[in-house]
Length: 506
Ligand SMILES: Cc1cc2nc3c(=O)[nH]c(=O)nc-3n(C[C@H](O)[C@H](O)[C@H](O)COP(=O)(O)OP(=O)(O)OC[C@H]3O[C@@H](n4cnc5c(N)ncnc54)[C@H](O)[C@@H]3O)c2cc1C
Image (cartoon, rainbow, N blue to C red; front, side):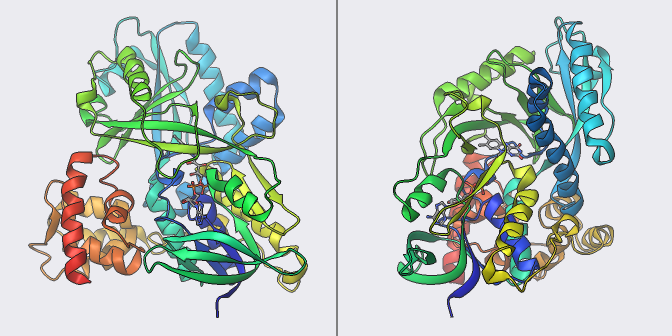
């Protein structure tokens, strides 16, 4: 029977977090995503689990408690994300190269405050680093005028795979999760209360009806569209802002540290980060239209190139770009912030319409768990769930891939595979599930590759179809093995090979 306690529309960070939290509390959960999971904003982030160094500056300058609270919540959730998904995340050191002596104590004081706010959730102390130290770990950084720098810690994680791990976990706890199901209309009772949805299955091309006691709108930048399906007179609350990233060769950032440029010409923060053996640069911030597949603008690429070239002794040109992608921030605008999206706060809102539709929007990846906790707490106060009084358990819940002893899983993986690089890659993507991936390969000494350059195994695709909700070749290439995000040319080859194997195994 298509009848649930909670129906979540949207399979990005927000919806996936809610599905897991609600399932763990014993609710019968259905999650519907119109495309692949995390295909929207949630696979296009800077991939930092952070409290928001930038918001901290605003908090200090304006003595704004809300911004302080946002940073405090962020650093706590950063710690939890690292703890609960250790195979998908890590602590990274970020260095801020500084070209004026005046900035050194200013930036150091700010980052020391960041550590102080984190308190027991701190990942380590910030410190001043000498010019020599900066150059030795980042030889191509611009040397002229470099005075010193400050290093601090934040978290880095694989956003697309984190969403998949959350959904695998939600499924394991009893939730039903479906990708390529687009919610097209609500079903109302005679009192105009929402009792279900009509959804279109893009794969079978059929419409289905699903019923639920409560429907959650977790559709990011599409939130207003869904709200208007419930009540066409509601005012918009989302102001989308686009941000792009480019990926370049590792030679520009050979160290394991990232670089944080604290102030671009338009007073933004720029990150240059190690990512999957390459270097990720971002991001931009510009008001945008809502669209399913936002395109990278030439002017945004030029903006990033202009800024990184000001901080490197190497000249990086468009030819050096291996891949680029654009995401839309679902910023909430309650009419207070004028037109500049970079000044909109990154906190989230929860709103309930008269029809019963609950919308959760805004926030950031780092705080997905906390957002879900607040939302499910609110739902459980409803009359229809009056007999359910379950506490949230996600703060200590390890996601699929991290649920067993990871050290012994890695040891077993290393013992099975001769190729240590391959073993490392599989471990970072699948954690203890890498051993399950290998069950799909009979010839472990001479495995079948779908892609030779990145050593993508045929077994990974077979596993992903069975256990990671892969329906299309692009799902696998972009959001399971994540090659689409780092190498556009090679991803074309991999998509063709993936399609061929999917056709054969159909
Ligand atoms: C450039 C950029 C950099 C960022 N960097 C960071 C960072 O480093 N750290 C951090 O913590 N946060 C970061 N963020 C913020 C973070 O990525 C977002 O806050 C988060 O991913 C939003 O998740 P979401 O689930 O709300 O939205 P989405 O990921 O957009 O998910 C909403 C989903 O709803 C689906 N949907 C829409 N309509 C329907 C429908 N009718 N039926 C079914 N499904 C539907 C969409 O297809 C989509 O997949 C960044 C954001 C951007 C844009």
